[in-house]
Picture 1 (cartoon, one colour):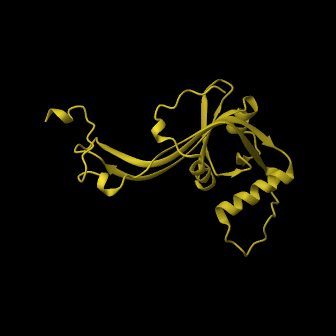
Picture 2 (cartoon, rainbow, N blue to C red):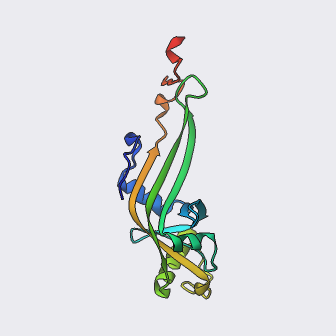
Length: 183
């Protein structure tokens, strides 16, 4: 898959942080293509498992599953916002710390019960690992769920870290507004 150049290379996230974010972020958004060519985005819980993004939804045919069966090409996004900070003397000279990942690839429907169980083991470990009162690994409604595995073909992680206090307004003036030098 050909990749357009990244406009803000200074914001690229190191691979280790990209992997960490994929492993720990709460929710992702999966974009698919409808048979009529229109986009569809669905927020989903997910796990980062064996170098792939694994997701699930109902086994009933609906918008998401119909789209995936029509065209397996998808885009997956996660983002984590941080603190808003000022860097210059005007209100518009404001930014936010963030981390984000955008992945492109092809998604496959996983029918194998053992692999589906593996996904749910990872999902429960990520989202509710501390419940020792219920049996683990028991998924009686496994056939009522569709599991998807996204094989990534291209991925980009970007981040804006919170600058140190001495680099923030008013201690430092990094005004970027066009009229900043006119005063």
